[in-house]
Amino acid sequence: TNMRNFAAVVAICVAVYCVVVANASLHLVSPILYSGRSLSTSNATVQQCGLYLVPSTIPGAGRGVVAGTGFQVGENIELIPTLAVSLQTMEACQLKNYGFGSGHENFALIIFGPGNIYNHRDLHTLQRYWGSDDDFGNPLELPYAYSDFTKILYRVRSNIKVGEEMFESYGGDWFVRFKDGPSSDVTEARQEAKVMSMETMEQYGHCLTNVEVKDSTIAGAGSGLFAVKSFEAGEVVTISPVLSLPRRVVDESVSSSVLMNYCFAADDSDHVLFPLNYGPLINHNTSGEANVKIEWYD
Image (cartoon, rainbow, N blue to C red; front, side, top):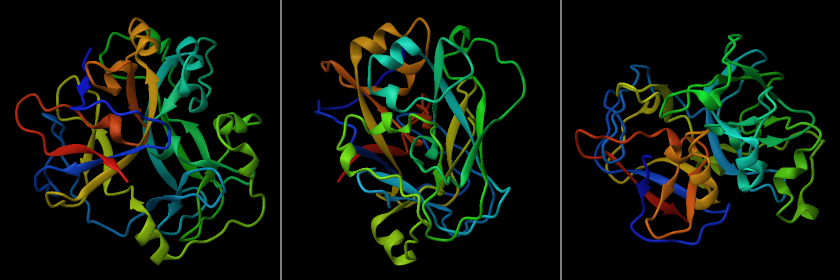
């Protein structure tokens, strides 16, 4: 089990966010790592931010993802890894509000990246697809220390304007995500989507497309997170909401899932933290110093 340790124990709830901050200068062609993980980056030209993490336009829904550029029908947004978790584990903790159907009876999927942050609307603008038609078998039996199940593809199903929040459909029981919160304040917003100004996005949001997911440069590590722009020391690289999970539940899942390998913990805490968004995909650098660190986001 590969656990990443916090220096202090903090009481965490779903509203807490952690931020990954550059520990040293990161360049377009250099990798991003926790105390030891390496990221190689693409040679793509840095462009306008495509996606912002911003307070949602739906009251009571927390943060959502807003388009920083326009998207047309049929465009692919992202191909992202998933993590298979048994239904028994899901039902015993907050993960039950963040799981998606897998087509199997005994497990569900956690989608990394913005896939766990997009909010629901019946008139959704995004559609999820399996990343491959291959038969992946039972992912709970795969002999890897990382998730190697299918990837999920997000594709635009109706045109999206700059400043428009991006929605997918959770299905008929989507309110389960909000059942522990003030559901009376949550509305489905069937009307025309509100459009945020670029000023609002830049003032209150954080760019999600300054990083990308690719195969790790570390042998046997699966996917990793890579910079697509240069970062100076102290700059925020990415922001992830975190879920507080009972350590006992996660410990009991180790025979059927690699969930523990994507969590943070303090040695003397009875809870572990599971970051949503891209946080879990930053690897550990075993051969050198880290180039990012984790801090709490205010």
